Length: 171
Image (cartoon, rainbow, N blue to C red; front, side, top):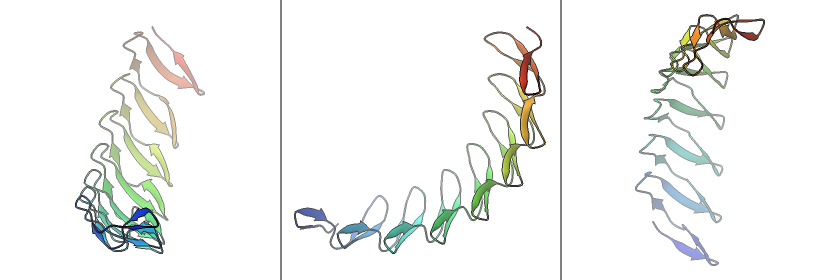
């Protein structure tokens, strides 16, 4: 890194290549910006600065989420696909909005999720490992407990929700 002091302030007045991010940095008008290109070793993201604003102008594959990102009109969007290793969720961007357009199985809740008309809903089933509760979605609304649940702490069996009210029907 090439550094200089101007008016008592430490700035980067030449160029710099950071070994950790492989980023090329420059100072314009006393402001540190990324004026070249950058490949982040952790996210494999290509960055560039346009008009003094740091944007993602190329592509990016995140090793943790396997997400492909692009910038359109200066806005960071997911323009490709993404499979999250933690939730196994497939994500897409439609009309600039990040939605779940495929399916998702959460390893913690075993819940299957879908997007209907741009709204994230639970369209399948879910078994919560903590409460053993089975949930379903009817007409795009997360209704209810449509199966059964056994609470380990109270040993109460909880059944269906009627008119939005949870009833304990056994215990």
